[in-house]
Image 1: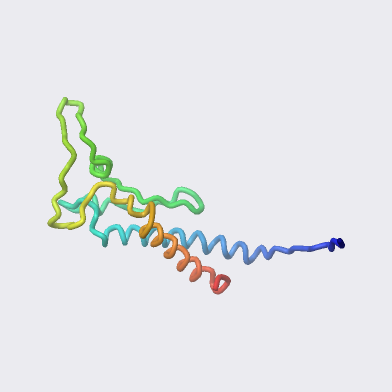
Image 2: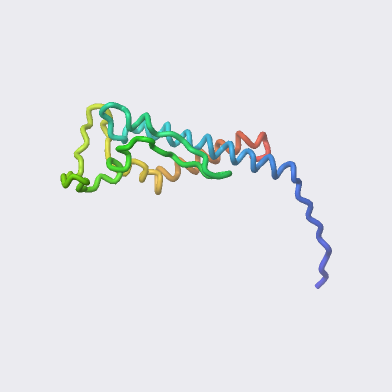
Length: 137
């Protein structure tokens, strides 16, 4: 069996373009998830403070988080019975649905599997393709 010498040359310009495009696509995807989250009307809504408090935060090169700055976010998201420092007991909430008809706890869980995960993958792929300026077809 004859072995030939193989020379591989990586086009660094193309690699940088793809990496930059992936970064832009990740940010756009995170923003699209936040928009989708709000349009799905799943965040409990009374005064709109909780819904408005959500934003996209870049934490690393290709890592973005959807964060809520509301002091109530953790309480409503996990919706567990709690006892506060004053000894008061709070049962899990029953969300009113007049402003957001799909209001629920764990509103981000949708994106962890099935249809929500497909949304993320498809959205990222579309943005990466567009941002790659023709490298990805």
